Image (cartoon, rainbow, N blue to C red; front, side, top):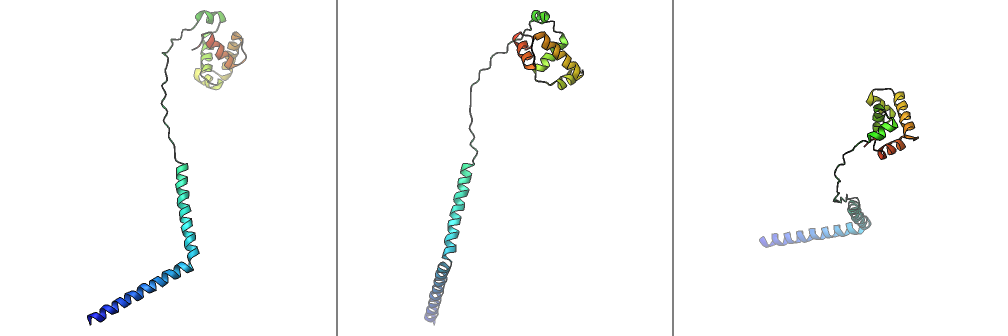
Length: 148
């Protein structure tokens, strides 16, 4: 009886293995195009993700440069030139604020005067320096050592 059960089990196993093989072959034959398409899609998706990550990676480069900073130069205003041009302390203050890049409105708020007063002081400075623009006035004042 033991032998019969063993043979029966073996035949059942072989039958199940045969059916699974037939089912596998049927699956592969019937759906081979879909399987190949899925495999190709998976390969290209993986390749695309890998390539995308590789190309868009942040490449941080650290550049170390030695910069020599000169010792600060002590600014000395040329008082003789300032007196010869007859620039008042308020006009000099307006000129310094212009050199810092402030607009007329910002200068007016900073020194608590109206914008028209700033324009008047600016035009007096322009006349005394013989220039037409703010940038020229600042450049010339620095050359004459009136402002730092």
